[in-house]
Image 1 (tube, each protein chain N blue to C red):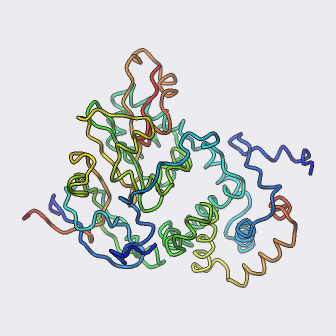
Image 2 (cartoon, each protein chain N blue to C red):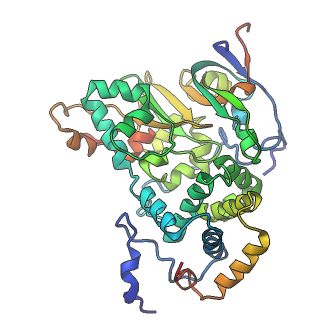
Image 3 (cartoon, rainbow over the protein chains, first blue to last red):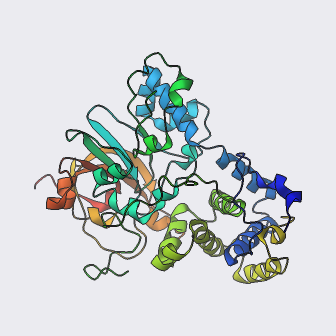
Amino acid sequence: MPHDHHDHDHLSPSGHPYRADDDTDLSYWQTMEIAVRELLVEKGITTPAEVADQIETMDARTPSNGAKVVARAWSDPEYHAALMKDASAATREMGFDIGPLKLIAVENTDDTHNMIVCTLCSCYPRNLLGLPPDWYKSRAYRSRTVREPRSVLAEFGVTLPENTTVRVHDSTADMRYIVIPKRPQGTENMSEDELAALVTRDSMIGTGVAKTP
Amino acid sequence: MLDPKNPARRWHDMGGDTAGPIPDMDAPGEDHDFSLWEKRVDALMIIGSAKGYFTVDGLRRVLEDMGEDAFEKMTYYERWIASINQNLIEGGAYTTADLAEKMAEVSARGKTYGDASAGS
Amino acid sequence: MTQVVRVKPMMPPGHVRTPIYLRGKIGTIERSLGEFPNPEDLAYGRPATAKTLHRVRFTMAEVWGAIAENPDDTLDAEIYEHWLEPADAT
């Protein structure tokens, strides 16, 4: 069926194409989503604009926000200290709308590597970094990371020296975590923007390291 | 599955289990954006909890009670809308009868998500 | 609260946020996070009592014993006060 006439509807506010579900058969769960949303509007609990705004807010949350935080912490010792003391306040200070997020920053050093997991569900610092990758929510990642973090890291292509201590953080309750990756060598003269480009999503979960220039 | 060594262990409490390789970390499209209906489910969770109808703990409790079969066979946001709906009914946002009537109305609108959600 | 703590080996049914692999294990309080409403109440839509939440650090040797991948690596988790008991004596 030609559907060129509504192609303009296929870009989300983040500028990415939506996955094509408008043209597939309506599922039971999609029917439920429409019904729940319309009931909440009819009962005066929300409005279509509020739903659209919330989607836009969430779409604006991406790993690049976290990368800017990391780059500033690498460049500015005072900011680094503030981030380690109260990561929620420090990210808000940079202008990020993180809602009620309670964030703790954990830092990789020459002898420590941090990794984040949620074994009970899939808690993630979504209000800063956006939605988690699918593998983060997988049974394999949730099950294995607390027991064999080095083996999991190896699957991500990260091999650590024996004498590095791995610290795994299981997000079991009200806090969320961001890893501050180690600043790569050879970046002494780089600007914050250049540094931010080296900070990957996985390096802030602890399943990766920052890119080297 | 019920753990024969500890029947008190619940399926979602999976830390320490052996499991296969981490799936699809480098697969093309791993970084996919979600579809509109999935983003709307996410938004309904935030709005429903911000307005005090339920908490993230209520969301999780229903997801856990839905069981392992739902975890294996439904997608992430399918499970979420099921849990959000149950929490909203428990929280008094609308009744089961309201939902039944509305779902029938929605599915009568057309065959695709685009048709059925048009105008809303 | 003492610094060395054991996670109570309770096995209640229902919604709890203490992973089973940590129950009965001994760790050290890494930091305390203040009071939070008890998720065991919130999950059922009930008025929640405030509970102090602690970050507890365990060694992999303590959690997994002989099968630990690297005994000196650590595992941190947030545990509510009513799941912890002093373990200084042991």
